[in-house]
Image (cartoon, rainbow, N blue to C red; front, top):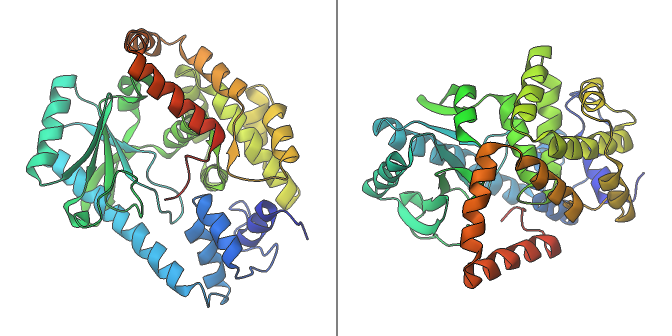
Length: 358
């Protein structure tokens, strides 16, 4: 049995490519739970215990996360209703997972012109949402249900939502929302219509976001990829690649898929053919991140190398929307206070695990 908690955890939860197969009997462990929670798959670990009748001391944790997962969906539904009623076009992204999950917040991109973005902000204010934090391209709100626990850190999740003017960080746009518009789909939650992205496009956006701007690969990325790929048809995979190619994000997708392929090989003895075939088409395994992961005893969340981050950025600015936003970012960087804040954030992302469960 592997001594590495990452591999042990994967084998206990199993792979979506072979549902129902037991690779290693789940063990109830407070330490493994903390590790899973940090990787944003705490509920998935506890579910594996529950299904095998081994959930005992961690029952309260399971109840808490199960409540959190369901209440977060309600937060998404309520936010969607606000925008639907205001007749504002939007898409929820980086929020839903193909398994029970507990995201830190609900992320929404306003697909309207900037003037209509202000109308979207006003719609949430009129609905009594609590204003938490403005940023250049987004605004954080708290659902009125969370009035007694609202905080900037979003600890405990559930009630928080980020409304994006553009899918970006600071003033830099890393996904052109005009291209997202073509990949919307409607889902029904609690009897309400919610606009989200097709799963294959959602996955590409999540993998990009984990490299840029977050620089962090957690087991959430592993399971989101595996669950999605296990269900993807040839058409889904073609759309996944086409979206990544047209949005200049093939490289970060390759970096993330390489880690998923490697971990799947180590935990289950093989690389799923669907993942292998996609990697073969986009340059093959990216070894740099794998070697670093091995050197760190498979520890996750894994920090992407600064080189990987910079290559992703340099390829991305070939896109006109990203290039124009870089010019805007550059102008604001002339402000020494803003530049200091940007550099501080980048440093913290390199030195700490910022993209983890809170």
